[in-house]
Length: 288
Image (tube, helix red, strand yellow):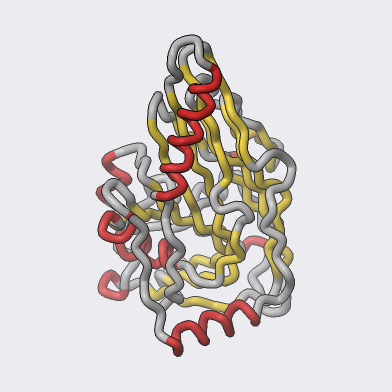
């Protein structure tokens, strides 16, 4: 069942104002590949579908705010988190679904992706171009911060450092920072700088090719919000710049009845539709 948060008229007006302040139109349509793609074997069938599609130009960042708090990036621990307006823009260079074979992409001369290939695997591929405007961070000051909302958390350590969102979205949902385990020290997606060759980002581009495995039968949901940020570790200050990008995918898998291609398609359609009904509902609550 979807849980909807009531929005006061004042909050609604504030949110609409933040959207109208966006510097340029955002085209979130899938680009570079399909919005939905499937794979099959004689005994099962799987499909990865972008969700949301189109991607959303996200003016607020509730998952990031919750992820920061869950990892201890709080006032009580000496951290200051500021939310700034982005005068430049973010543009989708790639945004498409994949199944079975994870795509590859190259940044800094290093190739990312191409792993976890096979039956019941799927995900999404995204590449975002950042064009800074007046007053926006540039060059080495640019970092990327991303939070994930999913009902498919890979490790217990991630859960321990995540916000339990089950009361909002249903059992098993968590929100957490995509920062490779640098809990309480660095919230950024690209936290392994200065080893530039190992980073799927630059000062103007962001790359992610998430993958999940869903054995038959069932469905999982994986969504993310990514923003530009700056980090001053010495003063424990994080500045997050909106607007960001809200993107993700659903992955469903099913086992067909023997010798029935029709039932296979109907069965998967049912799994996928059920997954769509249980997908996260957008929350419109602005960052603190």
